Length: 150
Image (cartoon, rainbow, N blue to C red; front, side, top):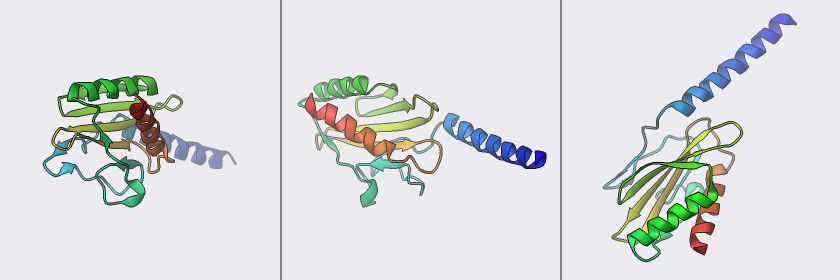
């Protein structure tokens, strides 16, 4: 019985260590190039406005007038959502990290402000685990709802 407990405890410890390591590792998939967002792995823990996978697709969001008005509305929506930090931003690309309150998991949100089409391209991906249990889609829906109402 003691050895079974040690085995289960060890497996649990390895599982937690794996998640912690994945969570702290800076993602390599970030960025927006000439063909759009970079490709993602096969894990089902993301949503994007630029994917061919119907069950992972979300709609891009329209600008709210000028680029500066749009970015101000995005900043307001992010503030209202809470639990996030803008790590980097340029005129056309923002990298935002959301941290879940309980287990402190990190999810990376990428926003590309496409001035040619007046659309915000959106992608959100969980850093750790395989499934996000629909969190990234729910976050998109909340973000989209707040942003649209502004």
